[in-house]
Image (cartoon, rainbow, N blue to C red):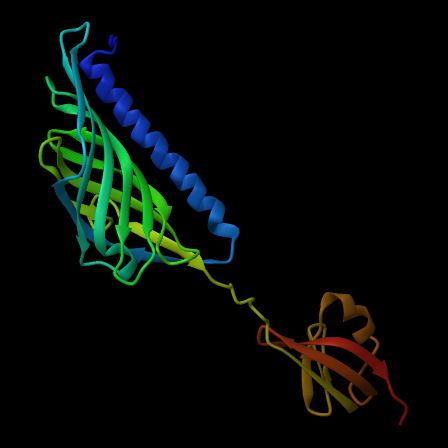
Length: 255
């Protein structure tokens, strides 16, 4: 096995990779903005410190003299203090690549939560490792049908003790949200109609009053309204839109 990246470059690449994932996920979230969905802020705590199955570790020294360790391992534990779909038995299949000389690296994997009520919350995550702490992004689907999860994920991590003090959202570093099905209620403008037949008691370029009913005059009817005078008989029709009664029709009536 031959590695050509220096420790500094590897750290920058890991950070850039995590940032790229975050941007891609943000793009996905924005794409859902036009769908009929609801967005809910959520948070959960987890730990996974029990090894499950075989651990595979490989080490080497890079060309710049850094010690590099890659590990595949599976950990089990529990998730608590969160909504039902984010609490229950936890299983994490993790892949880590850590520059043990500088204590930086990258950890990605598959995190599942099995709520007591059934189903499974299934998340994939990518994170930056720095001095025993992970910070990254997890995306996937909830145990609740039709609900997607987008979450900032943080945790303590060691290849020998697993995941401790884990957080799905709920930190100053970032939150978590669930996108579920919903319907956006259309905004319906309040519209009322009125009409009157009788004598014109007041008229101007901006309003007309007939039989006690006053309506604003739109520019499209200003010329027609100008032909009417106080005392003339008229029939008017008006519509109330956004709180203003506006003239929609006017006709002369004989006495």
